[in-house]
Image: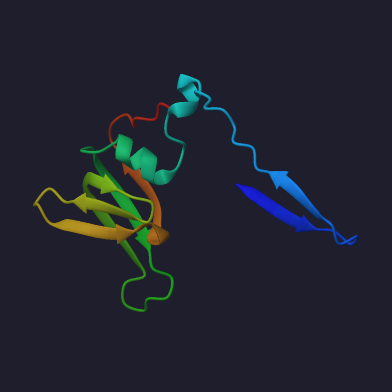
Length: 107
């Protein structure tokens, strides 16, 4: 890709955009980064207790869900309780989670 820049003298300067060579990252760098959704994804299927707070709600200021991690994305988590009821919760309301077993965290 060629880009032209105009300088005060009025003459265009041509600048080539360099494409870096394909570099393989070390194995440790290829793993997922330490974000909440990645940690939850690594613990899919585990039973945990999840705490959420809704700051601007008069009726339900906070909620606690005991359930299994089914899926997690950048802005949401899907949980299912032991009775099979599923919850789609937004991560902006997520406070923390507790697990009764070891948490997978191999970053």
